[in-house]
Amino acid sequence: MTSIPALTLSAPVNLRDLGGIPVDGGVVRPGFALRADDLALVTDDVARGLVDGGVRAIIDLRSTDELGVTGRGPLGTHSNVSYHHVPLLADIGQAADQATDTAGAHPAAVAEMMDQTKFGRMYLRMYEGAAPQIVTALAIIAHAPGAVAFHCAAGQDRTGVLAASLLLALGAGHDDIVTDYVRTGENSAAIMARISPVMRPLMSRFGIELDEAALAAVSTEFSAEPMRELFAALTERHGDPLAPLRAAGLTDGLVAQLRARALAPATGTA
Image 1 (cartoon, rainbow, N blue to C red):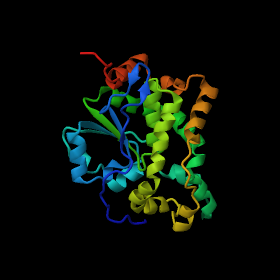
Image 2 (cartoon, rainbow, N blue to C red):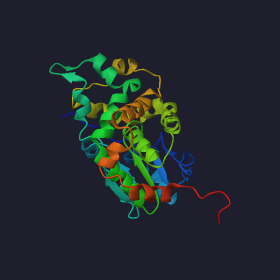
Image 3 (tube, one colour):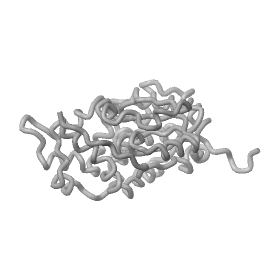
Image 4 (tube, rainbow, N blue to C red):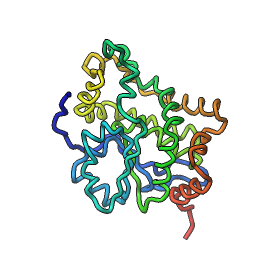
């Protein structure tokens, strides 16, 4: 078994509040929901800062494999923060299967698997296949007593799908959701530097070698198209993009509770 080096704890590089995004009836209230890269790797000081800032629930979207390497991290030690493991991929081997054959991973296949510009179909499979988990995460967000922070490893794909799901439920427009999604592109290099000490040996267990040659072949462009492709495919296949989530348990009552927690007070109200 490939060993994992000692974990390096650091501040997140892809952490942002969803506050201010326009939704039906107003804008998202700051301090309602935060999206992030791996919060299991934060320092004690960062964890305390998040808790002092109002975070009361963590939703960890990573696979069981990833959780087994890093654990919950410092945020898992705070008694006033609830921790929820809601993996949107059953295991990291699902990704490995798409880039390997019996001879091992092909560099071109690895590069394609890591090419963000081609992630639209993956997002669709995740959204439809993990709809029950997405609804579970939305229920946690709806009923948490304070801010909820949700994360995967990079804070890009699994986190991006959940952020899109939440914003869709709140009535955000597709363009505003895409605008939030592409903000991750500004942080791509820092994200890779932060998580690669864990992800490289972890992926190598499944025959995927994230060596320098493979990484160099990855497109450096961060595209809005994967999220746009997700919305287009959902509309074509279901009419209402929320239909897969509604079939998995997203009720009008849950949407109303999300909206009650998320909407910033209207200007001029008492």
